[in-house]
Length: 136
Image 1: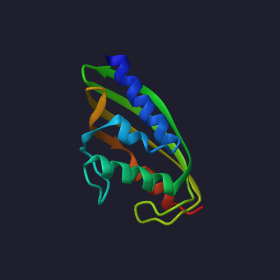
Image 2: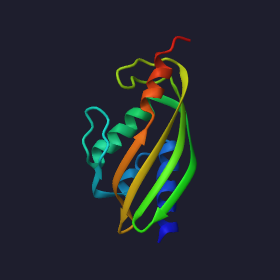
Image 3: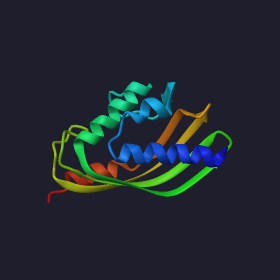
């Protein structure tokens, strides 16, 4: 089961990287809960999808590299590096800067019945924000 759960999360990450947000409805449970929210984000599947859509609108050239992935029981832990160019919409109150940025994150997903049921995350968003604030 661990390999199937890891494959589910890898698919979610790759589809999001490619901007295919429709996959969220397929891979996340209807009662999905996001435990680490962005400002003004609701903790449910629709709020999660909206947050991903805002990120996709704000950044182009999104590339996600999975650095490590560990699964045990119903949990999958993924450490990854995220890169993109802030040349689209506003991101956390900042207008597009045209800058290439990079952030690292660790996500913990709980899987139930072949769907992502919960997500916890920690990222270096402050580093990303600093990259946007530094003059070119």
